[in-house]
Length: 214
Image 1: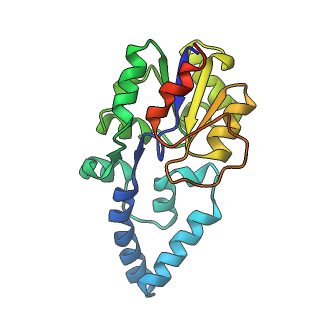
Image 2 (image 1 turned 120 degrees about the vertical axis):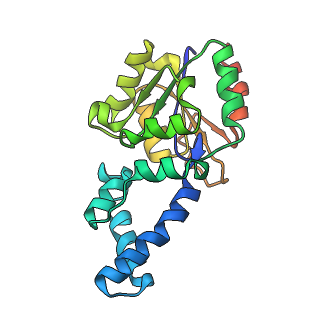
């Protein structure tokens, strides 16, 4: 194996603390605008999000802010509250080990261009030789071309690369479909569906996975 590619959210870091910070502001604004309760505002906003699950727009908070005509920008929220973007404790030690071991590193995300800002604000950007967002290829995971574009930028073939991600439908299925080895990071202990090449609970377990290819 010559390269390891990673999903971002739920794999390297979590944005949940930031989401929990701004969603109450969203519900409050919608409640006042529409003259409805905050619970009703919450339901209306989340219905739009869940109704677009796994679509191109679903991966972009700014799409939903625009949809409801909210004066919010996700980039500004991240820059105002960077401490609400939490890097998992195993992320940096593993990225450092991979770099020292000579692997090429990539990040592949269905999110928009602000994902690069997210990596910069969390101190992760410089670990990667290539970062590919949906904007680069106008496609999202599990579509093949987002993976193939990342592999091309890294200069490796699919069979020379491992994809690590927390989504079975996007990361695992998408990677296997183009001939990569798929590693599912299952931080929450969810049930698998026998489609993964490897399942890990922490990124530290990548050492064992990659050791099997030496």
